[in-house]
Image 1: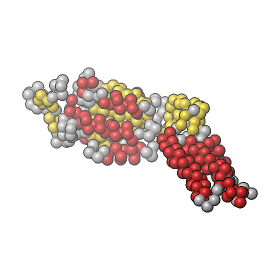
Image 2: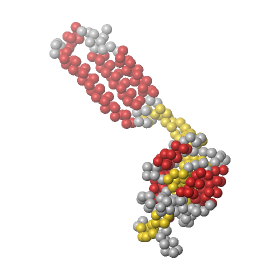
Image 3: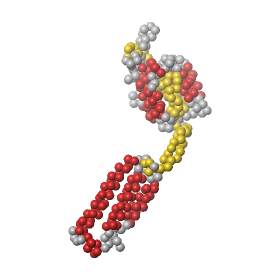
Image 4: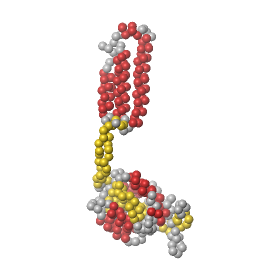
Length: 332
């Protein structure tokens, strides 16, 4: 036996006050009557007066109120197994963790902003399966498709450039890994969100996007950064900046947002390109777009549900309150 909402037991304090008030009122009546004459004399001349009936009415009302509180607290006992089923999409996020994402043209830096965007995506999920891919020079699955959003958040927090074995920006690798994550038997219910600065100048990304469309994957791209560019800071093990990344000629490397390739990738699959904003308005726009997509039934795990039994105390309370109403305070 358990109570689903025990907070309502605080109302028992009011029931206790009602109990004290009811018996105080009965005692007060007897005291006032005693001012006129002895109680036995009054009872002899007014035999219809019944303090016992008054106490019974008070007890019935108080027990009824107490049972209503028990019903509000949702009395439960007995269990049954229930299989959770949800409707949703398979949404995979591919997050760029290359060193260029450390540029600070978006404060505090591109990678932190991108992770905030992914957090915003997870917060907007409603029954959708979520997967996470990290990529730089190559790509790997950080979180397989799951309904466990809490675990996805933990895995998101662990992502940084040190996780990548090969530096660079290979969007094609991210698209290939994402394609393998989805159900290969269907060609719908698949959404890929690509968050990157787009510093991939190869043609492989566009070709891979075309193949992704053939698998029914719709890609939405979110550009992280500024087209004007920003130097890439170098940080030590303690997270302290010690300089800027330089090329073989000793020149400081400037990383720029390449939104052209991101627009081509999204257009190739029927998706859209958005630039990251401080208010995450692009996420609202993306979820408004995909809200009209056909959703599939996602089967979850078996869960134990407790059976509600609040109806019984509520029924007894109804009998007691109705009985108190029809019970007269006076004898016939």
